[in-house]
Length: 326
Image (cartoon, rainbow, N blue to C red; front, side, top):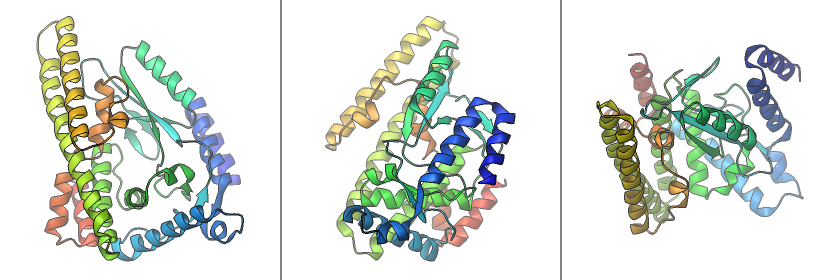
């Protein structure tokens, strides 16, 4: 209890309302958390929930034993937060730049988003940034990591996913506790995605889940194709923004290139029989492109690093730490 009181007081001294809402949000989640073992054993627990939490326990042990991920209190508890998203992230970028606006915090350093535990607070910040001339995007998030500072629970929002996606996110978020470089979101998310990818393949192979493996590989290939479209658009937009043409012409070319990207992504998704809604909801702008590239911008580099380690995870972690220090 005293720990959280001190946290709230420190937050008030640092950045007022933003830190206060963050502290209150984290405190509410901590209060809602119960040990997973107790939830499973409770006769009032629905069988489906008990089965999903049993899966979490199995994946958690696999993460420690097979992937060398931290053996700590993370994902040993469960919190039902009774909403679809745990936080809402705000992204912003200048009208004629793909360099995202960053916010700096004591623990994580500078990141390209700002998270709010209430959607109305996120929308209020988005409105303020739009008035300042930024392209802005707001996205709901179903999981996040405190990097081991708190006992992160499995959230009810995470159970919206299928089993494969749930296990993948557990591996991804635990990877942030192995290596996290303050101020380099691209490095951190690509590293965690590489761990997620390698870990999930091992998890599925160990269980003989060949159909699930094929589906996972198909989803990964589709995402890679989508990111190739985004990367090409980013290259074209960067040329437009760096050119000496006037602002009106830049706006025209920007709108045309983003519209072409949206069409290309929708066509690719439809070709694979996928719903384009989650990708294509809302108008594309510079800020919308920020999170699209965040998780895979350096993924190929980490894949090569893991291959050079002959798929040994502990070797990979060591080499990744060395890369981070360069």
